[in-house]
Length: 119
Image (tube, rainbow, N blue to C red; front, side, top):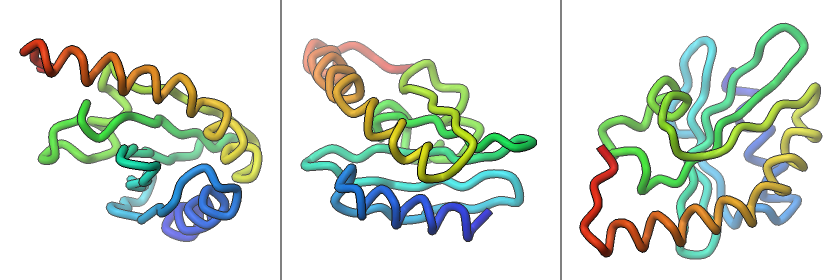
């Protein structure tokens, strides 16, 4: 899993999707990547099933720091999923979701400013 995560991190930076991507936490079946795009941090939970590779991309502000694990990222109601057969295809699908993630970031920022809680 660590090799897959490193390869996805390289693809996401090479394609210009993110400025920097770090592999943060790797278990046998899943990896958490932290990706920087402008002033925003995204969490990417990466996993595989059969011949599929998939990811859940969430805003770091939507997941409490103590909960930056695959299971918490996958189960948070915030964020978007991407499914593919190759890492290159997955990187392209993640790139295609950036506008929606930015919209979620604006909504989340407004909610937090108004005093709403995420929990």
